[in-house]
Image (cartoon, rainbow, N blue to C red; front, side):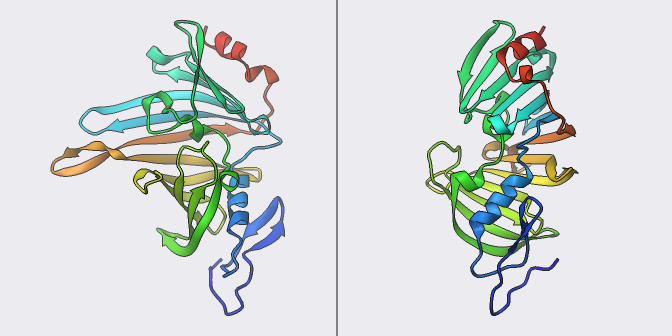
Length: 262
């Protein structure tokens, strides 16, 4: 479906299925509605979400490291649990998010320590907040938007500014394709420094929801010169075996983390 301007500038959304469907461009663009629709496609309210994650961190001149984990999410209660399954040295470590608190469990000490959603996940370029539901429409205001082409996709490029201090990145640029899915994002500091770039290689559809196949995170501040070229540190996240089946309430608890590590 081609995106095009006309003199009367029609609205881009129509009511369908879960709400608003992504349509053609308009001058009176409802960018906030676009954000809400993009959030809804990757937010799993009314169901539970589980999947297997493979996280590969690539540090120039130092090599690659791989972390595998099991993810369990219940967006309706703002909870998630992550259990590390590989490498063996980290096996049994886990994270429990309840509302705005993230707990880290260390099976060696058998202790829980509170951490922040801003913290890096297992020293990768991912943050703890990257594993929770998408809340762009709630956390950001749209400063401007324009139509652009990103590879094979026709997109809206939106400039966002945070409306609270709870988010990790106060300024963002996001590319949303015609189907309402986020294809790329750039994360900035308040001063405008580019901190991180995210690209989504593709999505897998489950029912009416979408799950990324692969996510590439590039640290725009870290890296090393390799053969005369500066190469950024990056992390690739691969998501396999996604499910929206109901999970027991007991999964979202400290007890579950403790027993899973044994």
